[in-house]
Image (cartoon, rainbow, N blue to C red; front, side, top):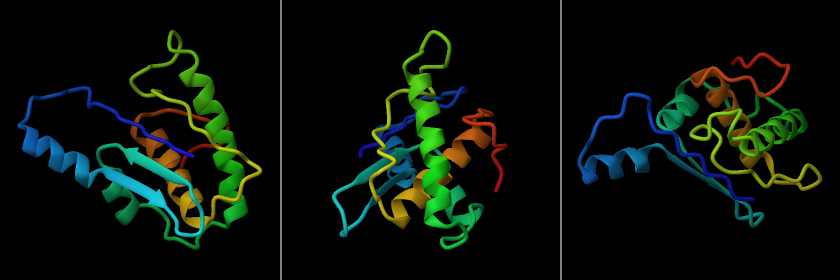
Length: 134
């Protein structure tokens, strides 16, 4: 599974290559595991800090809870990617290959679930009937 999301802020200002590389490095989360061959790469300004300071800690949600929500979120996300005339293609840039029958492990599901919560709260989007909250 590979997932990448790049979002440019609405108020973009030019910066040096060095500053941009620093921002990208600090706001890139690579999620992988020695137990499996899956990896998610999330690039979104502010997610790393949000995950460390605001998100519920690991262990708060069960893996089955997050798998169920992730499946809902991924389905809606992919639907939006396929409808660029209806949904902002700057927000929904590429599909997510997520198989609900595959065991990706706790860490991958935890960070993917929290990215969806972060995304919905940050960009004022709703990916399901559930109200995104922490």
